[in-house]
Image (cartoon, rainbow, N blue to C red):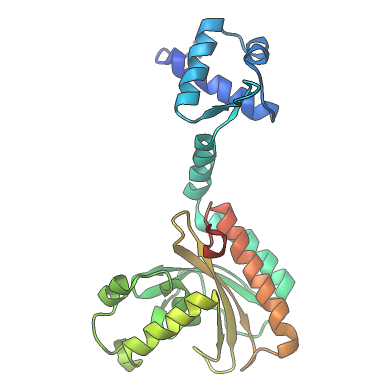
Length: 258
């Protein structure tokens, strides 16, 4: 069976060959070096390179004339990473967090007024009753929900909670909004018996490419209040986990925005 595709676009094929060549070499290449490494006519290679430069897939050094990969190639890579399932990327991260903290660890997203657990792992000796993947909880009732809601603007928040009082008699919407804004400025949430008596949590946000809150990572600590001698260590572990997942999905945290 003939394996050659009859629908190939020669110009596109040549351009992709050049991009792969630059990616494999891990350095700038002059036009002469490129010609030695690819099997294509000089004029074809020149036109393909100039097209890629024009589209920002390649960059030409103004002094040496050599070529390297441009910013558009990075965008393609980040787009691919972002298309991967968040659970697939986050599962090994929260497993590592569990191993480092010895606490139950979670990855959660928001769906309207609810939070949804999309990944979770239990600490080896944890006696906390663990939620299962797919569990939904009211966002305004949890520390995780507060962190996820911190990505909303005030109009978006008002659309989600149109009444002056929160659902199920949970208190004032304005007081809750002020709490969320404090969480946003702080960059994390420590909820000590906020949702369930005797269980505290540390929550950090995962940011997407638009600098929005995509998800949240947390650990559950079996204590009314987190012991002072453990607090900083546990915070650092959760923060590092959230930053790693942010990096994996091509996200940008506010602290890194120039």
